[in-house]
Image 1 (tube, helix red, strand yellow):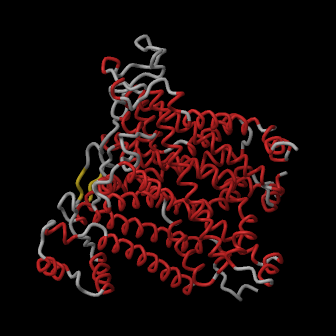
Image 2 (cartoon, helix red, strand yellow):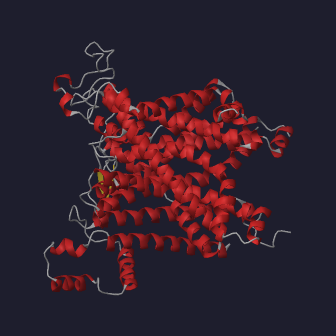
Image 3 (tube, rainbow over the protein chains, first blue to last red):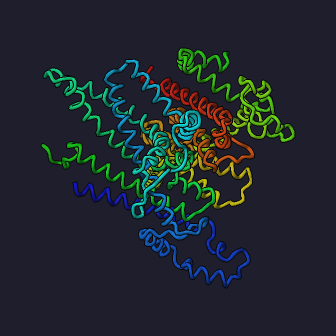
Length: 326
Length: 303
């Protein structure tokens, strides 16, 4: 168990280092910082002086180590486009994206699991077929089109819900939250639904397939033979065993949610990290791009790590050490 | 001698195609979209790029079935009086071009690297597969955006051709991983088989073994994957263009059209953005259905 944890931790550190290396290469070699500071007509002496000031004359790996050291302290330099420290920009935008992603994930789970269970238990019923058709649509419609359609129906035609921005936010230290005001919630509905739909259909299809698989196994037949109620069999026995793969996929998808938030945030002008990243890409703002890359990688690696560890905690078969058990 | 077409029609695959209504319908839609895109200058009622033919007097006309609409512009016009139907056909042409080119390039890259990794093994294999693992743990759209961003930083004043180059490159570099992994897997299996060992024993050069002996035997799954990836590539392209880092507004793809039309959603001109969206979904859905059918048809266990 301990060996497993240590190995996973080492792997995680390795992945982070390689992502940091890519970010470092971007930083160092895309768009010459010296030229940006001095302009086109600088003398070789000036160039050499600035290079020394920026530490660019030091050996490659020393520069990389310095970059990692700064990154560990959250220092990614200044945004080229906005002239503000990158760390501050990201700290401003991070709460918006995290709230959006978490609400979308909750929505996908709370709606997707019951729909999947229903589609498996009442297979062939009208409603189950409606669910399956809906899920096919959810998988093949691109995210930005779903967003546009929702805006067209609920904002333009019906006028029920706002279609851009976060509405009213409450400042809580450096964290700004839209979850404490009615207006904030109203602004959250459409973006969260847009972001959730793809994950929702995925979770629904997964739960349905797993449920069908589990319902055919012997221990379910045995539980029925013992005379347990349908309720106990379906939810106490079947669903419980379905949830292990669902947990894995959901964990991995949460990272995907934060990445897909880029598209949703653009459609709804949601002031989160995704919108910041798109602006950075459009204006070729390398420091912001590098910082975003590292942060996303960190989130992915941490989520993967937690999922792997939870997996061991939940599934007793994985807890047995090699050679033990018999 | 029967023609190849007749042979195909009589084969198992042809039979499975004829008896699957979904496959026939999907193929018809895909063919219709493909042909109209290919022959856009002859099919489209107007030329959306001919500035002289644009008439601001007929800007923002609704589709023809509205009382204000006119049958000269069946699906309405945009803010500059451009015919939506023609813009759609030309847009689909650009979307399909970018999608097909990038899939072809990523098949080429992925299959080559997969063959080399699987056949040579050792550190080449380890290095390539680690790279694949890292790339697969991030969503494709994120990697494509990153490459597009780097492209923009490297060539700040890129003209149109270069912009398309960066776009195709970013989709290619996110797509090759899947092929590389599939091909590597089947190459590992093929390499152990007797015909490959025989070829090695009689001294055939490794490159020639890979190309002439192993390659034909690992291409089946690649074909299925490539079909489905065409849909993915078209949607990725549309997403990038929608986000403003894809096809330039001077030669708009479907995604660019949706992006432009999005600004007019609130003034009630829904047709500028919805019709390109419908076209996009039609293409993606029909290609996806074709890919699903092909996967089942080529799977010997399902026959």
